[in-house]
Image 1: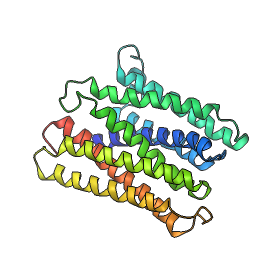
Image 2 (image 1 turned 90 degrees about the vertical axis):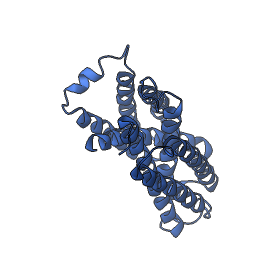
Image 3 (image 1 turned 45 degrees about the vertical axis):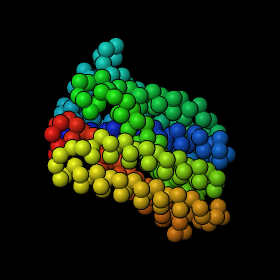
Image 4 (image 1 turned 180 degrees about the horizontal axis):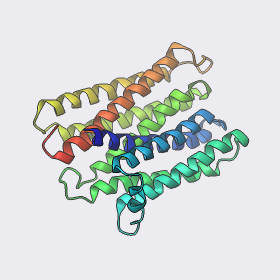
Length: 263
């Protein structure tokens, strides 16, 4: 169980970091906002936490060098290398935002590397012989989780400085992603035997839908309201619920499919 949790933290941490970075850069186009310092720090920090979780998953820190040395023939090695590239660019971007917020090249580079990294992460599982992973399902799971986490956490972190149009757009995309992820998870796990997977599936769907609803409702607030308002609190709760729902889904992804017989 502990090992599965480490994998959950690794994948969700990196994907949340990548999603936040993409949300930051897109907000510059839709919102005209040039300063997202806190979100930039969160992106870099989550990336570091996620990668460290994988280092601990390996058991020995030195093993990471062996894991990244097989780039030419290992999807895992490619994912780890691109994760490190993303983290490096995210850290540089966060630092630059305190020096010259108008410089965005590192953020755009990190976003591009991050998208490739998510695809590589999905291919780690799609290339295995496990029936539950030999499909496009892992890519749908990882891509939607990246979008949902990135948009929700970005809205929660930078709520007071985001325009109403951007809030509505981001919350609607998060809602669509939650519906897609919920349907994909339900189709994957609803046929599994055992009471525990069924209970976790129900919790996952409840958290996803409740979180998306809270986030959408929070986005309807007038732009002039301040971050301390009740609607801002709804955005925080929505992001928390969505994150919890995705963590449950990812635990099912690892614990159920890796054992192929339930929890």
